[in-house]
Length: 129
Image (cartoon, rainbow, N blue to C red; front, top):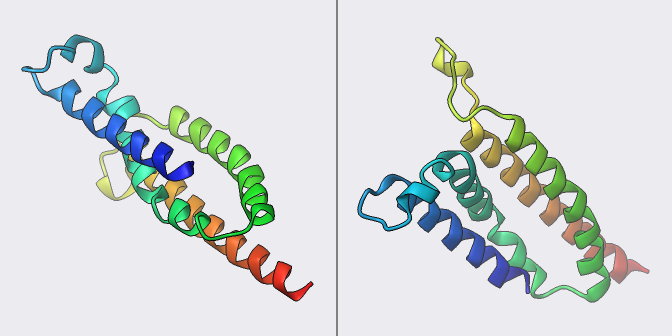
């Protein structure tokens, strides 16, 4: 169930971003304001999310429910962080620029790492007991 949703998010993010910058697209007037502020961070976050559904396919139900509880609050936190991050950086020193795409990369990467650690920990904890 999580894998089809992830793939759908990747496709929606990619084609929404592509249609927002391509003038030949019929929906360019709708997607243009959202292409870099919504669709590109969505696409980047979903790309970092790919390993998690592949691992969740092989775990027990109690591990999946534990991960689901974690994902509810983490995805909400990620949405807030990405929403408050600016689309374009006004930094004169590009080393410290931090934009929506960077926020989505950081939150997506942390989500994947923490999810995989949680899944492995819960799986081995269930085997010990």
